Amino acid sequence: MLPFDASSVAFPAFRSHPFLRNGHLQTIVANLLPHGRHEYTAEQHHVSVSDGDTVVLHDDTPENWQPGDAVAVLVHGLAGCHQSGYMVRTASKLNDRGVRTFRMDLRAAGAGAELAKLPYYAGCSPDVLAVVRYVSKQCGGSPVVLIGYSLGGNAVLKTLGDHPNELPSTVAGAVCVNPAICLKAAAERLATWKNRLYNRFFVRKLWQQICERPHMILPEKIKNSAWRPRDLEQLDDEYTRTVRGFSSLASYYQSSGAGPSLSRIQSPTLVITSDDDPIVPVSLFDRYQRSSSVHVHVTRGGGHLGFLSRSNDDGDFRWMEWRIVEWTLARVAVETRVRRAA
Image (tube, rainbow, N blue to C red):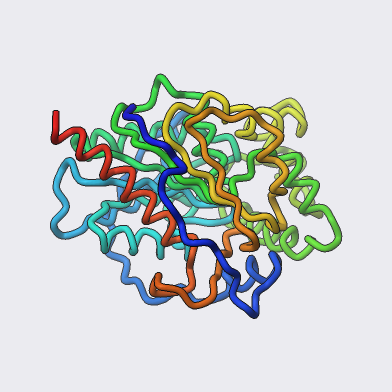
């Protein structure tokens, strides 16, 4: 791994849009705003993971891309997929700058809905590792940057921290936005009265997906009854942790959060989060020891996957996406210069 200070890229300060001055508004409006017209032209790759399941990658290759040029792997958040606005927009911005992108559908999500019997879960680092290895083989030595959002950010951080010696040498670093590094803390935050809207949204969307996929493994309690989850914590307990083989909800949450993994990360890693994230408490990032390779950039305002800014020089209001692009390009530029010099 080449020396690189993850904090060395100077970002313009985030300044919230004047009509979106709290974390809830940032989170909700960013999700509801249309994400523009982006024609789907990706090539799909099917990647086998453990248990015989398959995940899908959506490969967008710039016209003049060559082996050795930059590559990014994007991993979505809870209830998302390759079509999530933040995934589509970031991939498009990177493509415009010559970066080949692979948008990953986690197990049973998006285009992989019929290809897995088990659901994804917060700590699915073996799946991310399998994808990174596949992409590295496909891309002939190109530097690869991992980009994760929320739950996907947690999975990326666990991959880097739990499997540092199994990663391909082509992995150049990672950017993670609002990663849910402590599931218990996030679940407790979602259970509060003021966050009931997010809780209902996640439960409704996830339960709908489960009901639409009868081929997936279901616990007997769910399979043979009219049971419905009342909140995300109950869904995690009765469904996700049960079918994924965890002995208890506490065991699932404790073993799946990336917090303890931060101290073992060797790849240059940038975490972007906000001081008013309504889902992932910013205080978590001071709770866990992290290696010198990990830099946490905390913005004043921004919410959860929001970061809608006032007028600036970026070209649109999506501050977060432009910072991902800037950091990715800076990181691969270092790798490329050194490789060419060698």
